[in-house]
Image (tube, rainbow, N blue to C red; front, side):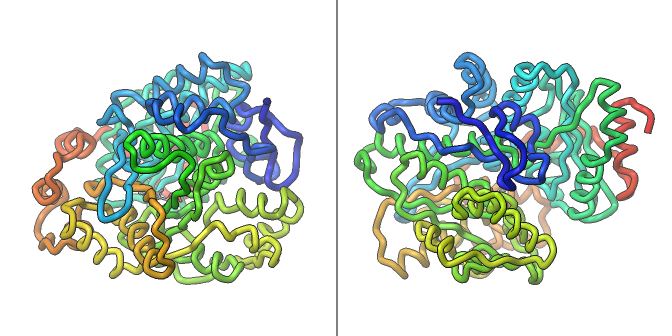
Length: 497
Ligand SMILES: *Cc1c(COP(=O)(O)O)cnc(C)c1O
């Protein structure tokens, strides 16, 4: 069955998967969604015998229906290879009564590698299929994690260039070092004098600059985006939920068809939306637990049916979840609005103009399979310490938010179903906060000394991703003002500004 993609705002006619991946965002500002969510056509017994790559093919073939079998299998083989430090790609660790699905074994030790290691291949294949001769230029603004994962994914991928802008004084020392040491002759990293919003606005302005677009086109370039609203990032994320169910079955932890719960530490609502799609494809999920940190817009939304971003932005120890506008929620809103583009557009307009909207009672009823929870900074730190003291297993701060929310849920409801917790980052990415939670004095030491300390405490080797940057040379030292970003792009591409 062919699946086409349409905009959540209702505009335009449906397009193929490869065209949607190339475009990123629909022309009317909406997000691309499949016209219908396909159902799995393999049994759980079959999934239980599959490798990660095999499961990836079975899931992705149902969505990316204009890719040939060979194209998809090539993309999958290039993505899930020795860039990952374990052959299983996404191992499951049982600790304190839950199953932690470790999504951090890729190049940048965070879950964004799961999708960003395949997106470049899906995109270059899409360019070929759509007869695009231009080089694809990926423009990304990052608050830390996405930039590095996108750089690592696109580095030296033929037919692409990647440019990343980050706030010069707004990322952690390890995050900055990860980016400025990025190898690959098609990569370009720029620190801007401004915050993340400035970087984001600058990138949006470049995207909508028609004159620049034409100039680029005449020189054989076109822009595209690798951020989490691209459907090419959502689809690869559905895979690991399906895969993990097969793996639990293989290990005899669950019975075929047994309902499980899934807990996801959430920011932009991409990862948990993938779990929701997996459920709609036939994965037996009872509850989807959406875990927030102190920026608990989503918790309030699930409680009240009101999405309200008018609140103070809190900087937490789980920075990748410090988000007040969860862009991917639009795909859920569209679905619970019965696929009504106008209704969704009206709500998104309200969000744009007043910073909030309220869904109808009818829509709210459709959310009963979700449970919204949140954890404070204190609860998150206590959870890291508790799990460590009970089991020796060390959680990163984002995963700890999910784990803390799960504990509250378990106590509140007595629900004893088997539960998978999406473990989204290695603790080595947030060494300082993790060690502080465990009770180590970190005041003097630099981040690399702390990595060694964590290695001792957790009894795991320092990941390759951290070892590599310890002594790596700085390759990118470009800095610009907020209004100098377009010129930087032109300089890098060798065209006149
Ligand atoms: C991006 C990120 C998240 C949030 O995922 P969303 O898809 O934006 O909800 C959680 N944890 C980590 C470590 C991340 O990098």
